[in-house]
Length: 353
Ligand SMILES: *[C@@H]1O[C@H](CO)[C@@H](O)[C@H](O)[C@H]1NC(C)=O
Ligand SMILES: *[C@@H]1O[C@H](CO)[C@@H](O)[C@H](O)[C@H]1NC(C)=O
Image (cartoon, rainbow, N blue to C red):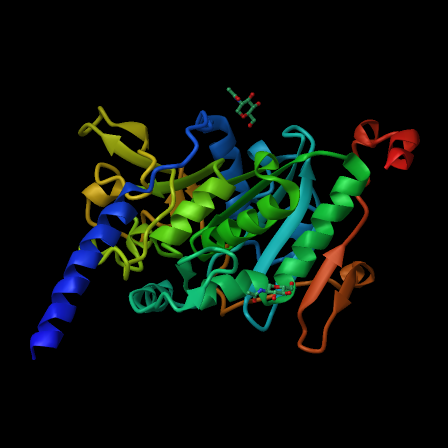
């Protein structure tokens, strides 16, 4: 009895220490933190919206109705459609940004309510590789790492780099797509260097614990996690302030979009939050109770472009020549970038390596 009591006291004291260190989550090196760029976030949200397009032909040729506006002229060089797991992502080159853009589609389930309910119960059940104490949910990680998605993305990025040289890499996604974007950004930052990778997510759920969040923010400091009003997904899986070792913890830096004012005098605010990842004065200051706030970011419609059944794929036979399909019906379309010849690295430089 005595012994068990002592053990319990020890655990309480220990959890206090662990807890206080976890809450800090300060970056070790105080580098100048990356600047939030509104125009860039507005551009990224359009990519994150376009990747929901069900028609692969329209997406691959960048002619879908959402493939316009700030993303006009974008060239997809790799489109990955995982029919088995209902995932979709593309890699392409944005001339105006001088960057490779990668976007991940969010969940395409018939009922977003079901998916959200499910988020409550996600366990921190997977040790993130090479990250001491870092835990994530295996499902989020596997969707990126252990499907055809990762190899397709890496192939697209290396092909783009071989032709255009050192472009920045910008990764984006909404909802579950934001979770995949984060894992992809982390993967690419480890391969190509932290300086060259930036991540912008919209309405993403929490994906790991405090140790993981801290590791993530060191490897991918140039990350903005945009949240909107009462969007409930960023509130999930829940954050339990009093169980710092057991709880999910967002990484920084949140940018919270909300409106102030009343009636005709409403204007939008973009609040740049603190570097803890869990700023109590941002989206956490309100309750997460809105699905409709989840489905619009910067006035751009997120989510599926059709109300049709789960994971609908529309592909015209003319695209078959670009594709390779596996036994499960998953396919990757890829092609050589054709445009912006002016930017292509001259031959001699390629031989230098
Ligand atoms: C913000 O991003 C846009 C590209 O979307 C770029 O043209 C602009 O120069 C950036 N602004 C700053 C201050 O870096
Ligand atoms: C991630 O995927 C790569 C292959 O793309 C594999 O070698 C590696 O083991 C995977 N990592 C984990 C932790 O599953």
